[in-house]
Image 1 (cartoon, rainbow, N blue to C red):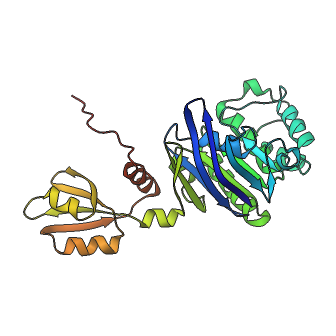
Image 2: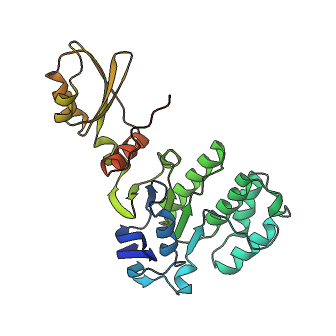
Image 3: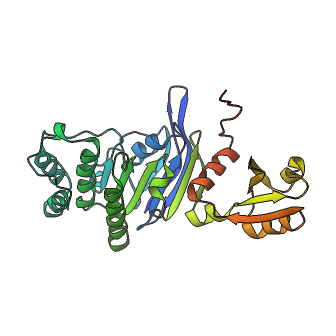
Length: 299
């Protein structure tokens, strides 16, 4: 189990993470999501023991991570900006095999072969996506209890992404591995994560499940009989709306059951409730916290 208590990190006057409290149980896949600059990479680096927090504690089954080689041998860190030891895929395999006691060379090369990656291929000749495949193969073959992925799916094609999602879910369920993935692209982790940790301005604004986040709000396409009264609907939990061809798409700050009751008293010609996606819900949560780009016009 991973536990953080009041963890903060600053670089000079800039606060990158503030009073982070987090508990992640074994076998959990956690999505660490937020806007650009929200602190995702800083948090990942602290969790891996790369950065030392200015305050607070980070414990793995009760053991601290910073300057603790024994704990770090059970952590695989996939950084946003990749670094490879050696010049070929074979060199990469040797590097990780020397560090991780449970690293499976057989599994690593089996995965590489499935993506047509040969052991003597020079790293410099690989595309961005192929380099990430090599690193993902190493993370899955590492045999560690904790896998941290920072924008790991960036550059992967759909087939590769779905393959790695399936493999990560398998090792999480079968071996109790904790997987934490930092990303700003929530579409990459839809139908993947058990829990979500939402970040905004270096703070955790929500620690929830995808199901809870999506069901928190609702959305409907409405045609009104006597026109749309903006002020009236803002009073009735409507957080945003837009109009297209006289049809209004309303987003409610309440579950669908409550929104349906609101619409029963409205003068409408038609009401069609549509599903909220995980990305929709994420955007709404950030906007509710103050992150929005407004008053931009294209002339």
